[in-house]
Amino acid sequence: MLSNQNSKVTRFLNRLSLEDQKAQLLLDSRKIISFSPHPDDSELIAGGFLASAVARKAEVKLVVVSDDRMSFTSIEKKLPMEKIVAIRKEEELKAIETLGIIDAEFLEYADSRVPEPKTLMNDFLRIIRGYAPDLVISVDPFLPYEAHPDHLNTGHALLRAVLFHQFPYVLKSALVKSGPPNVALGASASPNVIVPIDGFMDKKVESIVAHKSQFPDAEAIGRKIRDMGSILGKRINCRYGEAFKVLLPDEMHVDVLASY
Picture (cartoon, rainbow, N blue to C red):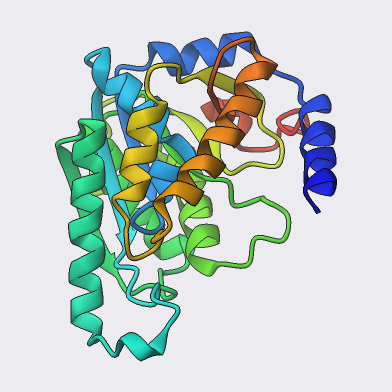
């Protein structure tokens, strides 16, 4: 089984076409918002990058879309739903404190019931226009076989929000004060950027382990995260890396080359 997994990783890495200029856009970004479908998603896909951004004095905001109330896999715990929500929020706050993030917003949509993109887009437009980031991050909604509606709706809503950012008649109540941000999608099947996170892997792992209700075996999840980070790092000749599909605002509408 392990040999088969290694073979898949090798094939995945061999077909990547990386774009150095887009990698530099991430490393130069000064105001960043990460939109997380659930508590822990931003840490998993971008924890190292977000910690490194904070360290270089970039402004970083985290938006958690759902409350993760469905996340406990054992009904035997017999916890009331409000208790699960409180646990997940407490774990998230501890995780982002580890990364150095102090600006967090919880939209508190019910887990598994995140609104459709046409509705959620308005929330994201309000936040993006108010914060004026030069980079936004979320999960890639085009990941093949991704079945979780919260991930799909969050990713698609973010792309729509960036597309319509410049159009003042779309959500007239939120004023347009800046240009549209670049987009970095994590958990992507076709990343075009790998950024180094040497020196920040420990913080990434610590932030993930903070989600004790999701990852009770801290050693196992830490080893898995480090192994994948090491594999990605080797692709760009560093110790650890994180991969993203980076899109410029003008690549999100009628651009047949955006997927290459």
